[in-house]
Amino acid sequence: MAFTYDDQNIFAKILRGEIPNKTVFENDHALAFDDINPQAPVHVLVIPKGPYVSFDHFAAQATPEEQIGFMAAVSEVCKIKDVTNGFRAIANAREDAVQDVPHFHIHIIGGRALGPILS
Ligand code: AMP
Image 1 (cartoon, rainbow, N blue to C red):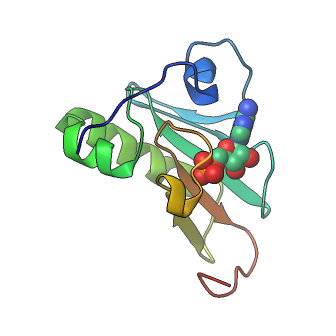
Image 2: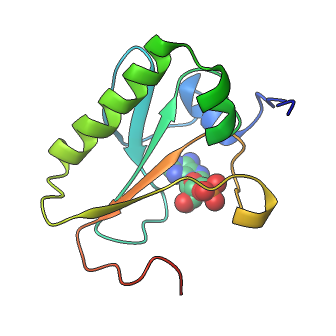
Protein backbone atom coordinates (compact mmCIF):
# COMPACT_ATOMS: atom_id res chain seq x y z
CA MET A 1 0.00 0.00 0.00
CA ALA A 2 1.22 3.51 -0.82
CA PHE A 3 1.10 6.14 1.92
CA THR A 4 0.94 9.86 1.19
CA TYR A 5 1.78 12.32 3.95
CA ASP A 6 0.23 15.82 4.04
CA ASP A 7 2.55 18.10 6.01
CA GLN A 8 -0.24 20.64 6.59
CA ASN A 9 -1.93 18.43 9.22
CA ILE A 10 -2.22 19.85 12.74
CA PHE A 11 0.34 17.52 14.33
CA ALA A 12 2.91 18.45 11.68
CA LYS A 13 2.26 22.07 12.67
CA ILE A 14 2.75 21.17 16.34
CA LEU A 15 6.06 19.46 15.49
CA ARG A 16 7.20 22.59 13.61
CA GLY A 17 6.26 24.76 16.61
CA GLU A 18 3.53 26.58 14.68
CA ILE A 19 0.83 25.50 17.16
CA PRO A 20 1.38 25.19 20.94
CA ASN A 21 0.99 21.94 22.82
CA LYS A 22 1.11 20.72 26.40
CA THR A 23 4.17 18.50 26.16
CA VAL A 24 4.29 15.47 28.46
CA PHE A 25 7.50 13.94 27.07
CA GLU A 26 9.83 14.35 24.11
CA ASN A 27 12.82 12.46 22.75
CA ASP A 28 14.67 12.48 19.40
CA HIS A 29 11.98 10.49 17.62
CA ALA A 30 8.68 11.17 19.37
CA LEU A 31 6.58 13.84 21.06
CA ALA A 32 3.85 13.20 23.63
CA PHE A 33 1.32 15.87 24.56
CA ASP A 34 -2.07 16.20 26.23
CA ASP A 35 -5.08 15.77 23.96
CA ILE A 36 -6.96 19.06 23.54
CA ASN A 37 -10.29 17.28 24.09
CA PRO A 38 -9.55 14.68 26.79
CA GLN A 39 -11.86 11.70 27.08
CA ALA A 40 -10.53 10.69 30.53
CA PRO A 41 -8.31 12.16 33.27
CA VAL A 42 -5.30 10.88 31.31
CA HIS A 43 -5.45 11.42 27.56
CA VAL A 44 -2.06 11.79 25.93
CA LEU A 45 -1.18 11.58 22.24
CA VAL A 46 2.17 10.07 21.31
CA ILE A 47 3.36 10.93 17.81
CA PRO A 48 6.52 10.13 15.87
CA LYS A 49 8.54 13.09 14.62
CA GLY A 50 8.81 11.51 11.18
CA PRO A 51 6.17 11.90 8.43
CA TYR A 52 4.01 8.82 8.91
CA VAL A 53 0.29 8.84 8.19
CA SER A 54 -0.86 5.86 10.22
CA PHE A 55 0.20 2.97 12.44
CA ASP A 56 0.61 0.60 9.50
CA HIS A 57 2.69 3.22 7.63
CA PHE A 58 4.93 3.66 10.68
CA ALA A 59 5.22 -0.08 11.29
CA ALA A 60 6.14 -0.71 7.65
CA GLN A 61 8.55 2.14 6.98
CA ALA A 62 9.90 3.74 10.17
CA THR A 63 13.53 2.94 10.97
CA PRO A 64 14.33 0.72 13.96
CA GLU A 65 15.62 3.82 15.78
CA GLU A 66 12.34 5.65 15.16
CA GLN A 67 10.31 2.66 16.33
CA ILE A 68 12.41 2.21 19.47
CA GLY A 69 12.22 5.94 20.22
CA PHE A 70 8.47 5.94 19.78
CA MET A 71 7.96 2.96 22.10
CA ALA A 72 10.29 4.55 24.66
CA ALA A 73 8.07 7.62 24.61
CA VAL A 74 4.98 5.47 25.26
CA SER A 75 6.78 3.89 28.21
CA GLU A 76 7.74 7.28 29.65
CA VAL A 77 4.21 8.63 29.28
CA CYS A 78 2.84 5.66 31.23
CA LYS A 79 5.34 6.35 34.00
CA ILE A 80 4.79 10.13 34.04
CA LYS A 81 1.00 9.79 34.08
CA ASP A 82 1.19 6.89 36.56
CA VAL A 83 -1.42 4.72 34.89
CA THR A 84 -0.77 2.00 37.45
CA ASN A 85 -4.39 0.91 37.40
CA GLY A 86 -4.42 0.48 33.64
CA PHE A 87 -4.90 2.37 30.41
CA ARG A 88 -6.05 1.96 26.84
CA ALA A 89 -3.83 2.55 23.80
CA ILE A 90 -5.76 3.40 20.64
CA ALA A 91 -4.49 4.12 17.13
CA ASN A 92 -7.18 5.05 14.62
CA ALA A 93 -6.32 4.56 10.96
CA ARG A 94 -8.21 5.98 7.99
CA GLU A 95 -11.93 6.19 7.37
CA ASP A 96 -13.33 3.11 9.12
CA ALA A 97 -11.68 4.11 12.39
CA VAL A 98 -12.42 7.84 11.95
CA GLN A 99 -8.83 9.05 11.99
CA ASP A 100 -9.17 12.84 12.12
CA VAL A 101 -5.49 13.80 12.02
CA PRO A 102 -3.44 12.12 9.28
CA HIS A 103 -0.22 11.90 11.28
CA PHE A 104 0.25 8.63 13.16
CA HIS A 105 -0.61 8.92 16.84
CA ILE A 106 -1.45 6.63 19.72
CA HIS A 107 -3.97 7.78 22.30
CA ILE A 108 -2.96 6.78 25.84
CA ILE A 109 -6.19 6.98 27.82
CA GLY A 110 -6.64 6.20 31.51
CA GLY A 111 -7.17 7.53 35.00
CA ARG A 112 -10.65 6.02 35.30
CA ALA A 113 -12.47 2.77 34.54
CA LEU A 114 -12.89 2.75 30.74
CA GLY A 115 -15.45 0.03 30.23
CA PRO A 116 -15.46 -2.36 27.29
CA ILE A 117 -13.26 -1.64 24.31
CA LEU A 118 -16.16 -0.91 21.93
CA SER A 119 -19.60 0.35 22.88
P1 AMP B 1 -7.97 10.78 15.82
O1 AMP B 1 -9.46 10.87 15.60
O2 AMP B 1 -7.54 9.42 16.28
O3 AMP B 1 -7.21 11.27 14.60
O4 AMP B 1 -7.63 11.73 17.03
C1 AMP B 1 -7.22 13.06 16.88
C2 AMP B 1 -7.10 13.64 18.26
O5 AMP B 1 -6.35 14.83 18.17
C3 AMP B 1 -8.43 14.00 18.92
O6 AMP B 1 -8.55 13.30 20.16
C4 AMP B 1 -8.33 15.52 19.15
O7 AMP B 1 -8.92 15.95 20.34
C5 AMP B 1 -6.82 15.72 19.15
N1 AMP B 1 -6.38 17.05 18.77
C6 AMP B 1 -6.73 17.78 17.69
N2 AMP B 1 -6.07 18.94 17.67
C7 AMP B 1 -5.27 18.95 18.76
C8 AMP B 1 -4.33 19.90 19.29
N3 AMP B 1 -4.09 21.07 18.70
N4 AMP B 1 -3.68 19.58 20.44
C9 AMP B 1 -3.92 18.40 21.06
N5 AMP B 1 -4.78 17.47 20.59
C10 AMP B 1 -5.44 17.74 19.47
